Length: 194
Image 1 (tube, rainbow, N blue to C red):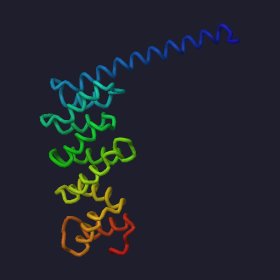
Image 2 (image 1 turned 120 degrees about the vertical axis):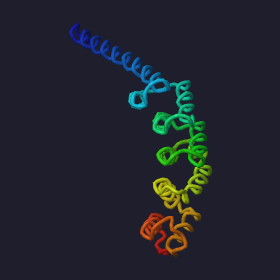
Image 3 (image 1 turned 135 degrees about the vertical axis):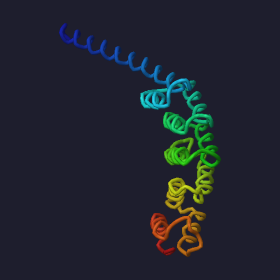
Image 4 (image 1 turned 90 degrees about the vertical axis):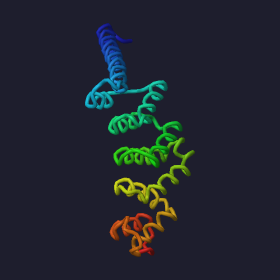
């Protein structure tokens, strides 16, 4: 049986926990509202993005809208992407943006999100679409973006990626240096390409 002093301590701990939880929920709501408001300064919105906690489905849908909004600053769009849970709708929008528009920072973040989705149910369902998107990006102009795509494909033994690496080794392509091509072939375990 719990004595009176122990009961009092448990009650105080429970009250403290509830107070912290309510405060956290309130802060999450404020951060969410600040982040989605275009009236706020960029720095304020980015800080709010870092302070957002759990987002319900309705809030996730609104954050997806922020991510998809081409008029938003690229940093805001990246912050929105990182706040999203991996789900079918999110991956559809990421695939669309990754291969169509956006700067290198946004494209790199999209590549990261696609890679993070690999072991999720949504990612597995869309693995063919993800692979197709990465195949498009292995010849992209920005090295940070195309290297991420190449890494993803080479560790999976993708024929198109192996062909692009072989072209670089043969001097037929300048997209990748010889050292990069050798590294990718080693990643694949295709030392016979070297």
